[in-house]
Image (cartoon, rainbow, N blue to C red; front, side, top):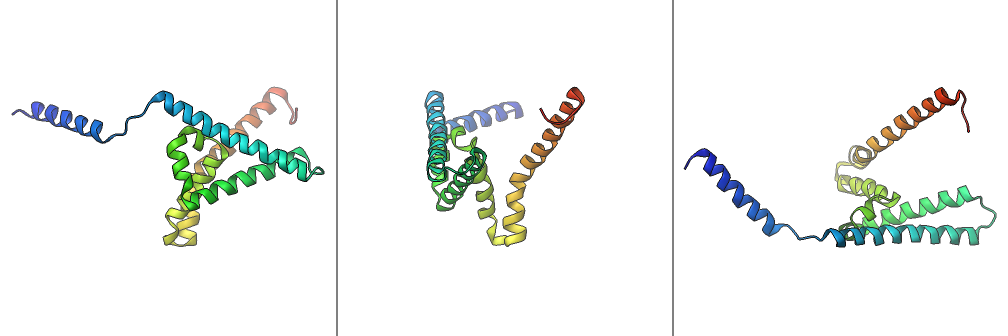
Length: 158
């Protein structure tokens, strides 16, 4: 058997194996699950914000938004630590990792995975290996947007 025929046969066997072990997914079902998981996350966030506004009427809208975000982040970290966020992620796909809760899950799961290497070189370093690029891009592109605004409008502010 020539090398070309061998490679073709090997690739066909591999494709058959991949199809056999890969779970079948429906794009429509995946979209629906992403939509309702992401929507539920937003619904919970809105509910928490309304609850905080009811309990603490003296707080500003910005402060209530900050407390709501902190609560959602804390809940995502807690669910990650208890192992529930993985189940949510498998079911919800993009609906679970696009909101702020997905970012918290990425940070906390990386920190948990490498905790055996110590608090500095394990937890802290690995947590920021996920978060670092996001923070760097946020700072860089915010700076670019600010400089463009300054160039176009000639001043800071609105």
